[in-house]
Length: 347
Image (cartoon, rainbow, N blue to C red; front, side, top):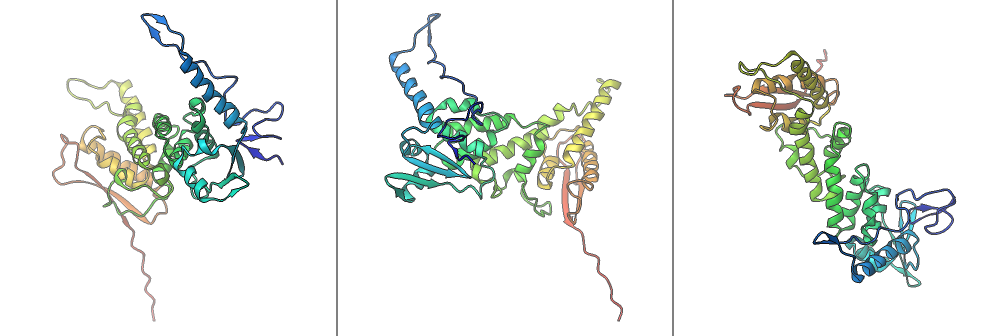
């Protein structure tokens, strides 16, 4: 079995067997040359300084990271060995700490990165974060599908704010109906037994699994919440409330019914604390208070067959005192544990 080195599976460091490709890179050939600034409508050639700096960075990435030439550090992570360079790795606070605390062998650093307790840090994400220490060329391989793992890895390594912001933005843009289930697991990886009186989930501290993301965990929770209460109702064309001046056409009414059904199916699988926060939020505009109340009741009925099934808890929704159709508040969601049935034993 070939040892995996620098993210490549092959007989030598960074060299892929004939016909194989780097599993993590789409980079082919040399990088594009330094961009030419435009002045007075004419493209200006890059300065010697720019060309020289780009050549150095390209060489660091190709010879240093991709092939591991002249490496002085062996980094072990999840069965992969990277041949790297201490000076570059010291840009990461996490790796700098490992190099200063783990012993050297014959002048070579040997460090072990334990990710057993960090399931959000994927092998691919860690690879791209390491590559970014060498060159911004690594950004070309970061996509919405792997951005979450990259964000986790960059947050772990430290002092990589630019990469974190880049990966976070891709994560934020990737929140849609197709990926929502994965993001709901991110919000609530292990549902608790909240009674509905707890602080809304968007203000709660992160679960230990997502603590690696630091402040980005909170930002992503807020983005998911915003998608549920603002973006999704518009996306599925929920609404179409008729008024005397703007009656709703039959076609619009059918689209509205289909949008409501889609929204109900989504909310049937939303973790309770997030469900409660969304239903009670004034930004969750579903028409009148009574419309939102009726939506919550129908969603709770569906939840009995989905996420709330077998939890031993009963979810309910009530109209708060003073609620009326002209305000956005007035709907409260609670959850309480069902009483255990007591059996009487006759003597």
